[in-house]
Length: 198
Image 1 (cartoon, rainbow, N blue to C red):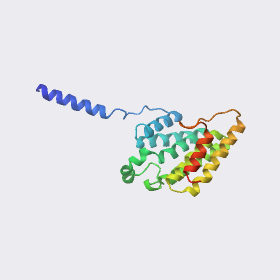
Image 2: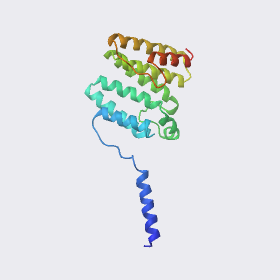
Image 3: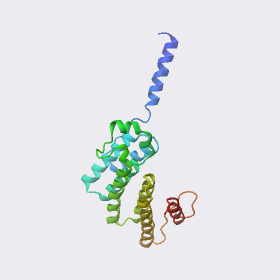
Image 4: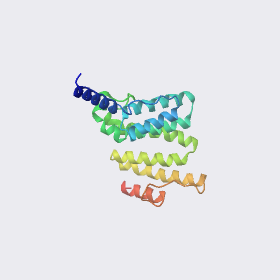
């Protein structure tokens, strides 16, 4: 075989292997690890298809274990997944192939996101996890905004503030950190409400 042909073949093989980088997912039976993998897949790697599979598997394991704390987090992650940029950028794939969750379509993904947030909300409420509820209500409100439904978003933002107050009562001195550019969470929440037209 000529030298140039060997070099060409080696380059092709290298590019194929490089293109496959990140394809393999480390197998695990730990549902919390599955959720961490899923989050990285849909937020960093823009690979929503294997991410959904990891979330589904985590939900199944937590359900079998009767682990409501884990299940709440899995539901929250599924809500974030459905409204993620990774899903949006894979529109054609999901229109053609659908989701693992059979009751959702690309066009109903925001509604399904809210549905999973509500499932998580019910479990977090039972557990009195007000810090998680604060974050959850924020994400519900932002999802309603994506749906162009400020009438639904505003009451949810009020619940976010209420949950934050309950968290501070239950844990005096606790700090929930605000996003960059804000001095405290209260200022951020007020700004979110204002931008939402509340």
